[in-house]
Amino acid sequence: MLNIIWPIFIIISYVYAILIGKIDKVNMEIFNSVNEAVSLSISLLGAMCLWCGIMKIAQNTSLITRFTKMLNPIMNWLFPSLKENKEAKEQIAMNMTANILGIGNASTPLGLKAMETLQRDNIDKERLSDPMAMLIVLNTASLQIIPTTIIAIRVSLESENPTSIIVPVWIATICAAIAGIISVKIFIAKENTKYRIKKGGKSKWK
Image (cartoon, rainbow, N blue to C red):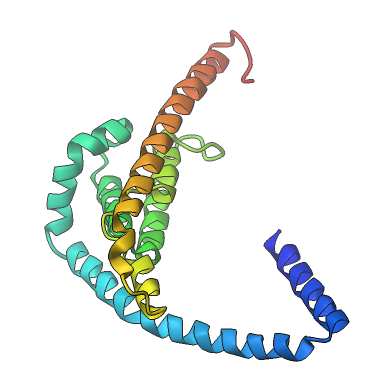
């Protein structure tokens, strides 16, 4: 869909610029945007390298194991079917840690790896398992204690107080995480009930 929407926006912008006689400004802004994008990427590179390196070190040490043990009560409630799946729990813990630290670029590959592990153990390959559904929501609406990426962007844009967003981010992500978790728990309960009824032959899945 985006492959259709963005070309349409670009074409409309060029046509409008030609009609009002400001095509030169459009061309100038294109080159300015390219320069700003490169500068922003370089600014973010340092923060990304730092946190990705920390996550790699943690992955090769016992830190993740200890962090997973700390999260065990929460993990067992969020993912009750993974109590004996140590590999999946460690991968999910790393994904949650990366999200909490606000490094989405690091959390994405970790989340994909966790999804691969969960899919491998998924009995019905055509249907999301309960842990997979919960992981998707947690990865999308995760609590962020340190919004690293956003702070780095604000620093690159010369914000006077780049860390002023921390408290609003806490409030927004806590609300999003709570709403997401409750919604998934409700939908999982409903879908599992329908699935059991279907398997029992009493009625069909709606």
